[in-house]
Structures are given as structure tokens and as C-alpha cells.
Length: 176
Image (cartoon, rainbow, N blue to C red):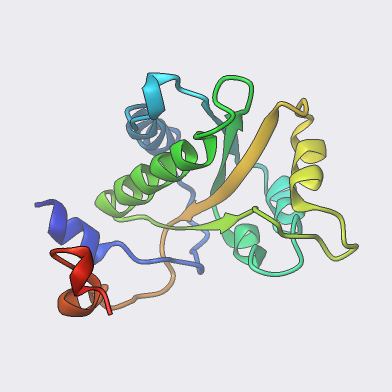
């Protein structure tokens, strides 16, 4: 049941040294390729990084919040082509990232994402620019987030849902 998987999925930032297999990466990407996009324009692209030196360098693309990439077995950069979809590319990438996180959890692996948005690196450079250079991308591409994936080296309890009555409204008049 999907709800069981959603409850099980947690953000994992500590990984073992056990590698994620090529077959597992292909399964993860296959699920991501089924993620819906606005108007079915499919502006989302994926860059798989496995090299340990590249993962270490990638973990420094922003000042804080990406250090865990260094310990991952693999990272997947979720990239959008802004010429294909200049308006909904961010949402399309977020949906794909959610599909990836759920598939990773289904497989017993761990993952979390490092967002890019307005982040800067230690030198104050925009993370978007740092990543375009790192991946040698044209300006039409935005790296939306980096998914760090590996075998979990930490256990977390099930996700506790937010309070239904405080977060779900039947009508706008109910919002206080």
C-alpha cells in the first residue's frame, strides 16, 4: 500500500560503504522517467554521479546542507531544460524527486535531497552557477536538486503525519 511506503520513507543522510548496483540505479531512474510533467513536456533530465571524488566535490556545491552527498554511493542530479518548460520546470523536477525518494524507500535504500534554489557556496557563488560549471551545462539547464542515495547507516522511525484537523480544510471559511 502506498501509505505504508510513504510512512516508511525518511530522509537518510548517513550511508554505508556498500555500493548501489547499476541495476538498482536503472530501476530508480525508470520510476523517475514515469513521473508526470505539466503538459507532458518532459523537461526533466538526470545526471548520475558515482565517482567518489566527484561526489566529494559535489557535496560542496553549497555552503550548508549538502555534506551528506560525500558519503553516498551515488548521486542523481535532477536537471530541467528551461527552454522546454520555463514555467513549470521546478514543479516537474520536484515530482520526479518524490518518485525517486519513494522508489529508493521501496528498495530498502536511503536518500535525501539537497535543494539548490537560492543557495550559495562557501565563496558566495550561486549554487546554480557552481552546478552548471560542475556538470558543464548550458545556461538553459537548471539543476533543481541533488539526490544522495545509498544503503542506510541510520534508522529512523516512521514519519508522523501532520495533524489532519489543523491542515485540511473543507472550505475556505474554515481557515482561521
